[in-house]
Length: 120
Image 1: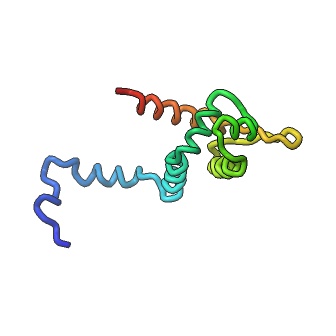
Image 2: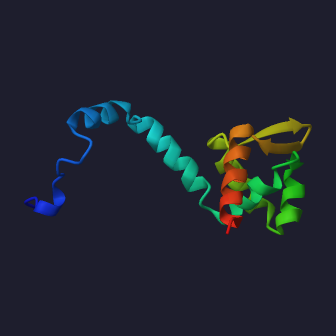
Image 3: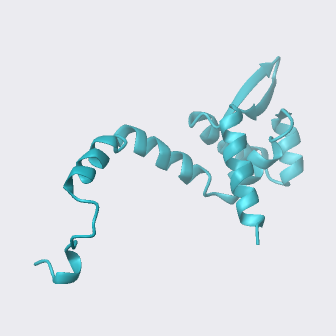
């Protein structure tokens, strides 16, 4: 498709030297795919409820099931998905598995976006 006048930059653009610098700083495909997977995980309401539930306290699967009012199989499936992306981590004590957020980065992302959504 041929470029139109509107598609071309004029003299007020940043210029090619800045474009080259920005291209060199672009994140690699592996990193951007990982980031996209995390955002995809955060795009699901059930997973967001699980993250919110784990914000302040480590919980066992049964507690999460009761809080969310869902089946154990469905909650376990979502927890496994979140664990594979290192959003949550687990700790096993006997037959009981406890889940918590993997690190403070997840908490910060969630809290920041929650504040953004609630902001008028």
